[in-house]
Figure 1 (tube, rainbow, N blue to C red):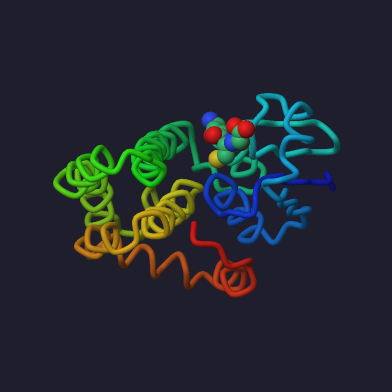
Figure 2 (spheres, helix red, strand yellow; figure 1 turned 180 degrees about the horizontal axis):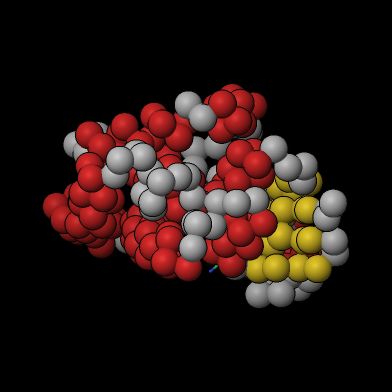
Length: 207
Ligand SMILES: N[C@@H](CCC(=O)N[C@@H](CS)C(=O)NCC(=O)O)C(=O)O
């Protein structure tokens, strides 16, 4: 059995999809959370000078989506064939776009630019990204995004909703709550027994 170490900050954000995969698969790993003030002394040891980084038997892998795809393929959550894998990639591409748009507003320091960007986000950006997920889930016979079963895309999407709401609070909740099939999907993911168990015991973070 390989030894896994996942290094990130004390946040869910970009590492949580990997943690959700480990939880769902019931795989052991070391969940390393570097305090922000200690980051400078670790930064130079990371391949892209950023986190998350996954170590598999001492080999380092950077980039959150490379990490989740690798783990998903290891643990049977990568889609049943190449087409399903490509569909999962399609969803995670959109998830990343909305993740970045959300974080940009949260971290914006200029108050008037922040207000303007938030207005655009609320008026269209966020629902424009969420609408295709809602439409896919409305048609899905399994209730998952891809094919007949759970893939890493579902876990990334689940994490995105919590991330949006953690970063933009009521402004995001007012948007996510308007999509009934997305809410149903969320409940489906959080009630998967292994996921429910992880959510109960994971460290509390806003996002
Ligand atoms: N494309 C990268 C982005 C990684 C990234 O932006 N990491 C941030 C935390 S979310 C980071 O390490 N920040 C500290 C730094 O850049 O020094 C990924 O998906 O992993």
